[in-house]
Length: 417
Image 1 (cartoon, helix red, strand yellow):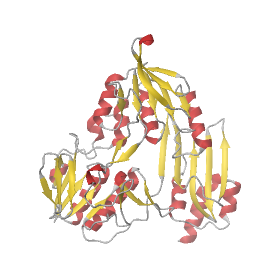
Image 2: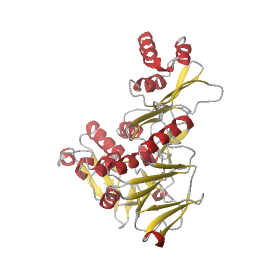
Image 3: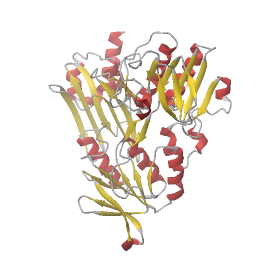
């Protein structure tokens, strides 16, 4: 059996290791298009801060891990998948055959169509090479303008602040992390960042980046509002898109990403997808969505590998799970944190202490939650959502006091047992 995995991030590696455990005699090739061994993008901020070297980002630390597990690492870019021939093709024309194929190609950063984006002092922060370039240019006092304050942007911001950058953040949404937090929570995070010395512009858009002769040739990010932000470096963190261009003409069904079923199989037999590239069923809505977070990616990879090895496994659906540390303020969102029409909600706000909790219900089931500044037992919120626990009388207690969610979790879990 020949397994090929395109993409050597966390999803690809988990799939390879799962396949090796299930099929000791199989041939397994793990393909990545960077010069690095498999590494975690989530570790890049720690590299930027200086807490780890580039080796600290590697997913497996033992130098002979892949040899010992007989996982063949290949560096190259796949340009075509030929399902009829059951082959993949690289940029140099070389072809490799497969019996089962996993697409785990992840995403790439969006480059917004803004005049001046080609300046060499404008960086994405997606790869280790990006991080090396940023680390070389950011010293204490370096003026940095960052476009984007989503989940990825906030992680980058944390690292830049730790390096002593003089930081300004520009976010098009009306609040920080708008795809993770509601307006109350997102604006609370923005106020926290400003208190920590970061200038925050929400509801703002950069229309042009140019070199300002008035400021010694420094960069100038010109906002639609008329504000001009002078910088030594600009970071673009405006979102990502799945890497699916190479699948054109393959017959594999795509939309925003690669469409997969609950087995993580694509529209074609023997071809699977997992991770950021997979448009998979959502746990809450049962609709296909992109859910680019590592816990979902690795679980999808495990399920894909089981099915590639001939076992039967199905995903319960990807669940929104986000936990973020923003300059020391911990926030989290789970499930349908936006709520649903006709649903009930419980909310607790302590603006002065930067504490916030909102629970969303459908009937007597907890379906989503937002929290800021609360770290104790927040995993219980995920547990209540993911088990679709019927709360019964506990719903009214939570509406009166949402902080008793841990007691509700323990009581309902004990009753279920």
